[in-house]
Length: 252
Image 1 (cartoon, rainbow, N blue to C red):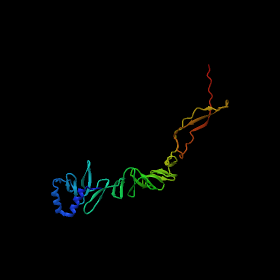
Image 2: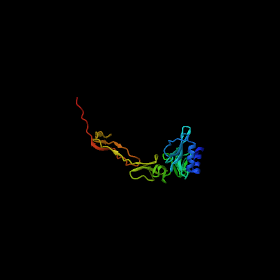
Image 3: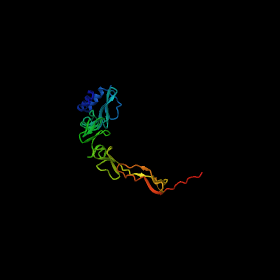
Image 4: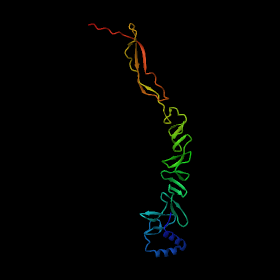
């Protein structure tokens, strides 16, 4: 950050001439100094805003159209970090790929397209870490997890493991079965069937014209088909023997 030469001159005069020297300086530039300073300013001018700050405040240059004006803040704005010294505390802009930082070499949040790793913003994460696009951080996933949102929230598992409730399993828990395509543990579904229908009409067996032996059938519907590892359906059709009753011929 560059502070206009006028501001550095004022700070230099503060340190070398003391309070009396500052009073003389104020008189000499009385035509340009505003008596209505912003909150936090020790000295100011109508053109440049704050020139010096009250104790414990940070001096920061803000854009006012095409011009920069000084301001005195209790904390530096986002994208800047504060540097304290006995003479002047200033706000300095973070590095270009860093959205917010603690110091010049320690970033706390990155711009889109970069990921935070050990205080630095990287375009890609080191091997073994996952780039979290929401947090913009490089995070360490559990051993069987290929991609995760947080340390204990997996979104995709490695080969031969299956995802369930953001955790990876080599064998799905009871009540679940592995889906090889989705690589997830899905609920196991057992077959469900409906009630039997009434027995159907007794039908005479073929080739037994003279016999009265017949067969009748009843069925039931599959209400819920089973999953791959679910309980299979029982038989849905039954036959039993019956006595075939010959139809009487009608007389004319």
